[in-house]
Image (cartoon, rainbow, N blue to C red; front, side):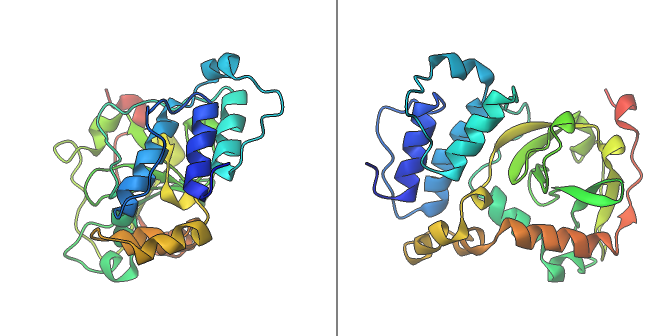
Length: 242
């Protein structure tokens, strides 16, 4: 039986056919790398893996495993992105991007809040690569709660196609304007914060503690607060972007 929560995630993903590394998970002194190493394999979520699972008495040990199994049973698929790596620093950069001090700084680019019927459903990060973080699940548009995705068509979000002005407020667009999203991977925030907390004692990476201590609830609360002061971002409708 795996001893740590992360070893349990490793076992769940292997049993689901999502992780085929030869060596079992072994924690290092680089927790961001470790969590990314595990969760990057959720990019393989696909219903085709179900036929290779010998269920029997199989019950995933972690919520990560249970969620992955449910998504596969629902026929949802994750895919490698065409433009985004969603690297081990994505979570830390998201938290930095939505920090109140940074959002109100007119010399920085603020995040874009995606809304559906007036409620925030995702945040498009404008610090480093422009990945999207889902605040809720909207499978029709490719949003899976607490997962990163790639906005599609992505070329609208590349700096040479869309320059997001510096501002002292966040921006907003509707889900209809945003178009669809390509699910990429589970985020660190899908791991219970109490399981991540001990990693802070071994952190040897820049920004590690930010990503270790933040929660999905905090991100959602920040999105709601930012939305109250957002300005609509004028972009071409998704249907007009090649």
